[in-house]
Amino acid sequence: MTAILQNGSTLRVRFAPSPTGYLHVGGGRTALFNWLFARNQGGTFILRVEDTDVERNKPELVDGILDAMRWLGLDWDEGPVFQSQRLELYRAAAEKLLASGAAYHCYCAPEKYAGADAAPADEPAAAAESSKPAARQRCGCRHLTGAARAEAAERARAQGILPAVRFRVPESGVTQFADAVFGAREVQNAEIEDFVVLRSPRPDASGQPPESGPSLPLPTYQLGAVVDDIDMRITHVIRGADHLSNTPKQVLLYHALGAKPPIFAHVPLILGADRTRLSKRHGATSVGSYADEGFLPEAFRNFLALLGWSPGDDTEFMRSAELLRRFSLAGVSRTNAVFDRSKLEWFNTEYLQKLPIEELLPHIEGELKRAGLWQPQWGLSTAALGDAKGSSQREWLARTVDLIRPRTRLLGDFTTWALAFFTDDFSYDPAAVAKFWKDPKLADLLAKLADALAALPDWNHDACDKALRDLAAAEGVKAGLLINATRVAITGQAVAPPLFDTMVAVGQPRVVSRLRRAVPAIPKL
Ligand SMILES: [Zn+2]
Image (cartoon, rainbow, N blue to C red; front, side, top):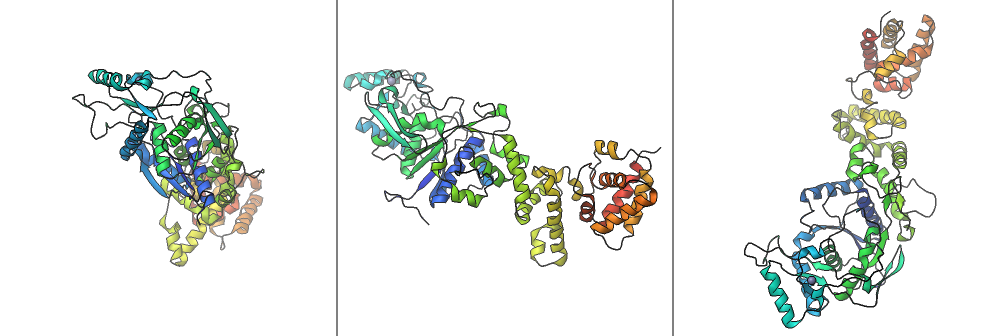
């Protein structure tokens, strides 16, 4: 299935992270929107790594970004393409701009344009749009011609300054573009600076411009993004609203390079609960940290999708197939989204309860493996072989997870408070001990219960229930006293799934041995 646009081209979108940090929640959301749009429209999703800012990039972070995308389930069709391997392309574009007069060499010291050409951070602290109405000061190099230019070049060279390439923004008129979210936009050209497109190359030891290698002149964010978007035939640029202010410059570049601008769709910013830009002050901001915390990727994806997009009604719980079906740029809001952690936890709880158990089990397997608790007989492979014992072990795991999950919020719950379902190596929660093991009669009662349970010919809910209540009646104690004490003995916890279901899941031999193990731990009179 391939979407053909009105102009006959195939729909192509890209996600273009810079390896200056981890995959931020905002970046993950932008990637998700691109992916949903591409998959919804039968288009192509391209991954491009914008790694030409040598001072800020950390190549070792690329893998982490790709891992976080994989965790989110965002598969890409092309790439990753690295801008650092395409420097010739940007140089050629700059040459083209110089040849047509759309750009000029600037011989000013690099400090003069510092800050004007840097790629914006994924989620910079700056406001989404700067609306400075004042006309921009143009660089003096703009008007140099002939002998004056040769003289400026010579003077700069003598000082070890190599020229940068600046775009010659028209002095009058307006630059317009259509944004699928924010509507028609228009900026006075007089307000747009003569932005740098190619940075000044760093001179080599002899003071000469480098011919090759990492010190080739590097493109600015504006040039790199536009040249690549043209080269990759990108049809829709979906990105954070912090890029709205770059867009007029990029539209000028498209026109100067003889290309038609794509459709832009700027998605709203993500704020913390206090309505300021989401940052570390609000807690974890990297997608990977939520993976580590035990959120389910599909729950996180559902949550992210609703940060700035709505299906048009109140539906919130939407599995991936539904998100894919319902996503559209028309549903993207102009209003900033608020990252609400309690909402994210609600989604995770919903997914832990509602996923078909077979879909949840691989995540539980990952969590048990991470905690060193996994046993191979619980795996699918044994069951798949038709081994009766293996498949019953798998069924045991499925039933046990199903029993535990109503009380879980994060995957880690399966290996913390529910630890005793998967290993004998657990300890008693001191608060549970203090509350439910304080009656000295319990040592004797638990020993008798162990004997009664050990004698049961059939191990099921009702048999366990009857054995415990019969003992309580015979000893003249309330069943609750015994139930609470037994729960602590076999799970270590004060709160756990219903006791007799828990006893069935833990199994007769382990329940009996855990009760006997508890006896010496009960405080004496
Ligand atoms: Zn200049």
